[in-house]
Image (cartoon, rainbow, N blue to C red):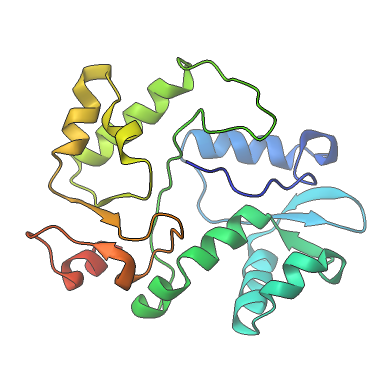
Length: 202
């Protein structure tokens, strides 16, 4: 529901070599093999380098440099998008339980609230893409986590998708929706699933 903190450096004006545009296109056709989008503070440009990306992400988390990363970005000549770092904070405990990064695909409900008060149209062409991703997840019996605002998801009218999602058995929610951490202690499990069952799905 919430797009999180924006990162003004990741935009088209800093996309001198077209890395950002190509990355976005690849993401839309599910052709991203591994993350690797970085902002070069020195040259004020976006680059794609999975190897460096992995080292920087590991440095931030292994050495607990999260606060330093968020408050003093100049300390990171090459840095990842703050949104990705936020997501990794949200699943940190889950990662520790699995001893690896969880396999996640995140779908945000749009339009979400806007701090500027701008009212987005309710019926956007991208909604069909969002709905198709949810349909595929249901068809493939993937684990679905409703993080917040469940009623908005359950009210999707197209092909009765909201009703199907509401009655989908392979679904969990979070007990604390104000702090949407993906931690085993924050999972609300249905009667047909144990915590071990859920963790195997990541």
